[in-house]
Length: 172
Image 1 (tube, rainbow, N blue to C red):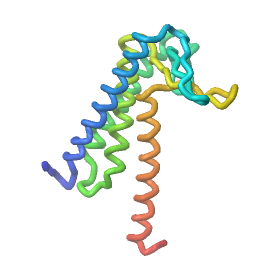
Image 2: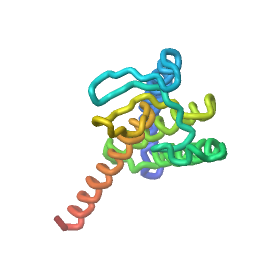
Image 3: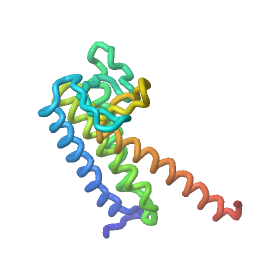
Image 4: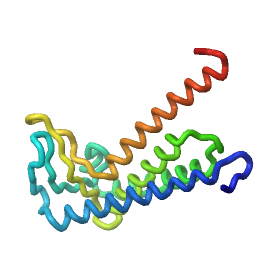
């Protein structure tokens, strides 16, 4: 393991997880594109449909109705966030808990999976559509799932680190 100035460059080894997210995301989206027409729906469970949808916006179709500038805005935003995440991974303290690098890798893979869609198609391909009776959750994909799990792990890591810091200070 290469260590410099107390940082853990071996945290970059978590980039395999980002790559796995990108590959799985693109493979599933490719299957959906080949197998489904736009808006075609297949019921899987009473609460889950597989349906091909195209999202030109962000989460929950935010800015989907904009004139097209949002495509490049989201590509640029993802590029900046990705560079920041790689920098963060490279400079993590050498004794970081595994939640943080795993979380960062999941967010990175998800962000890049959706960027690939925006660059190739001009929109993100969504296909997982959960609902309860007639109440539908916005459709999403594996990249979105990785981002959500990564965000949850970031929160978990912050809580754990906060407790550790308080315990080191003698608090409870």
